Image (cartoon, rainbow, N blue to C red; front, side, top):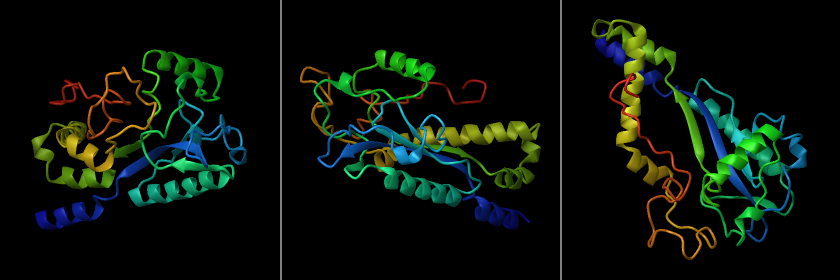
Length: 237
């Protein structure tokens, strides 16, 4: 019976509920930041729920719908990526790296996203609390939850260890979070490696790395997401 349950778990373990957000920097044919507005072919950027603009106007963000299978999320992503690329102006393309290309000397000339006034005011306040470049690097965000069928399959063999199903689910997510934190260095190295910065990202007198590093994007020089909370339990977190 236990072997049957384990086989069922393995068979369903890849069916994570997933949503993907991919940020990209739009550039012109010379490799500089684009001067073009939000692609006209995509309609009103304030109403497009799947292809939006991030903090700066040069940052396009693809947002997939939540999908019950990771493969479905990837299919959404590929379709939206094709839509964005087809909507770019003839002289535009998407920069392939997280760290930006050569920046203008005056970073304040990079326009903030043309969003609704309340959101734009938030972006302006957000930028004021950071360096001129901290919000420019882009990345990929994965929103993941475990498929309910997987949780139920594991729960069948673990009921005696917990007072309730909810306590069990909380425990599972804490263990997953602990795993991400424990292997964060490796995940960053494999999927977030950004060892160098192009011209004008740092000013000559700035505090900056003196040699290639694992990830400028994920460091205090970029848009870091430092994990400080205790993850020993849900309550402690």
